[in-house]
Length: 283
Image (tube, rainbow, N blue to C red; front, side, top):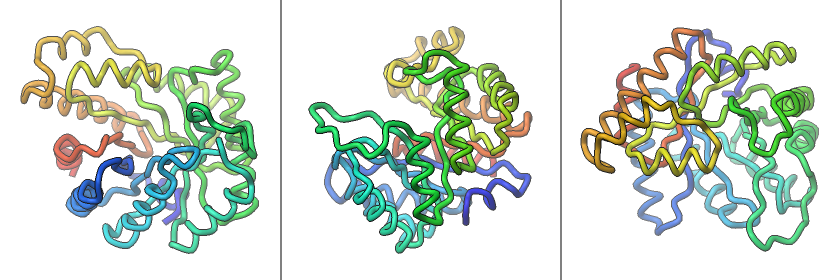
């Protein structure tokens, strides 16, 4: 099912993000087992991260195929244009289509250390236009409720988001955030720019304060002080800390749903328990 169909039902649809395990095949088998278990909650799709420069290309493609064939879920592979030429990009995308993939998340991506510059495109909007021209894939792009870290300012960030939509993207999946007020303000900026596609908020269930601080440094999301103080009361990975993460994520999601969110995209970090309990709460 394509993105336009998924988000036209009027119901809030949950989706999941996973990454190809770096370890042995058993880790991938464990992930597939978890996804088959989560199938009971009918997630709209499962996005699969992608490492540029060959760091996880084969693993990403292999995991996408297994999700499609074994877990019987709708995969949405990520694809970054760094370290890729047009011949490789077209070949890779056609392979995905032959496997029955219908959706893709198009990203510029961050170049790996010491990479050779063989980029076909400098910006994600160029990649979107290429995918639109060469395939029948339904294209999603990334959005940043607290502004992209490399953007000159918020107006510039929204300008480039609009370019991605004008080039053919039909949905926006946001970077993680913890303050819903920032997401609602972002929606107003999006609407003001005449961007009229579903904006799917990205939610990270946080299991401890170390993870909270690490992920926010990586992506630039701010941490509400009251949230930070709550995690400071518990040791990392304690039962109380994990329960707190589930509780905070559920409360955040409830407010988003109450305000008409088209979907909720859970950054699972390949963790079963928190994902399962959150999905169970809403089913």
